[in-house]
Length: 468
Image 1 (tube, helix red, strand yellow):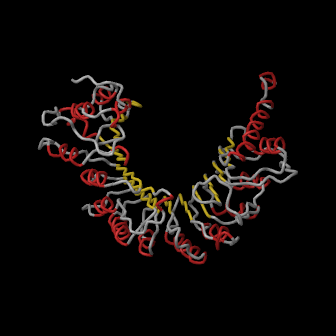
Image 2 (cartoon, helix red, strand yellow):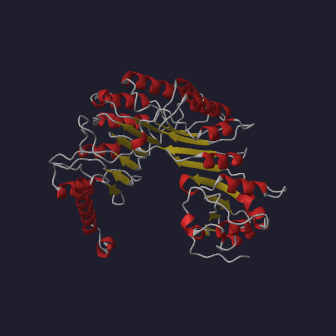
């Protein structure tokens, strides 16, 4: 077998992480997960040199500086490649991810396909990832994804990222459409998880997406669709009988919808999909909604009908004002809730919301979340910290609580030591407090978190105290 230089970045990943899987990277399958289903594969996967002879040929023919080239070529004929190891590994490949920054030229890929012996074929993965950035030419990714799609496919991720500078493109063709179309054209339903994300959408893509949802409606349990919808897409989502996880950003940033229309759609969603366990919604900025203090509360009121919710994430640019009665109603409506995420500044953004959107929830509301939501593990919400925080008497029953994320919270009015003391009194000792945000706010919150840890350490019972 040819000796391979470990100077190549591509080789550094050809190692086994566990006894159950190995990650193999090649010029074509830039990230492939090989399932180790028998002893021979487990032992073979432990050595970085025990990879298919074909991969050795590919790696040897690619210069190190070409690792992130967008169009790699063979420098030698691959007809003489030894396919025996490929025959062993290929049927066991389960996950393939194709990235815009590490593609192989069409010529090279075609040579690969042309020289596969007649008794072999391409892998049939259960998961395919397709990741590109506008305006990168995605043709190689599309052409290399299509032959890998089969009835074995259970998960498809098609992500097309658009830099802010490209936001005005109106004539852009969405690259993922042929990939989604190929999945829609499979003979039988097999897809269980679909993730599509694009700044743009057009009639052709939405028609294809609806066909895909319809074809695999009996199987899909997870749908992440972050692209502008039309009414037919909503109808397709309403009709998925096995849907349990839904993550959507369904409205274009260039054409904000009225609050009344959004609330009406969510009301229908709750009625059609009452068994959802996880729901996340992202709404783009709208000056109308920024001044509408009722949208957030209206959405939450409608979502109370999802009695099986375990995760809820709302990323809505609007003011949020909660009271103890609201939290009590959450506990009554969502007895299984484990993860709550309330952002007022767009999807998972850690910046302070724009002017006109106020944070009105004081940290004194935290005990209510722990008291009325006994299964809660994570709470992501910005809080204000007004002076004179007073902790409730006694430790609150919150055995499951693990993470309090205060990202985007404004600077506290209470003293740093006072905030830390309050958190120490309210939170379980094992709970972690997190903050991510603008540097000026981070400089304020990091010392508070450090003070919390210091107070916990000082109050840690000594061995003698435990013995008594």
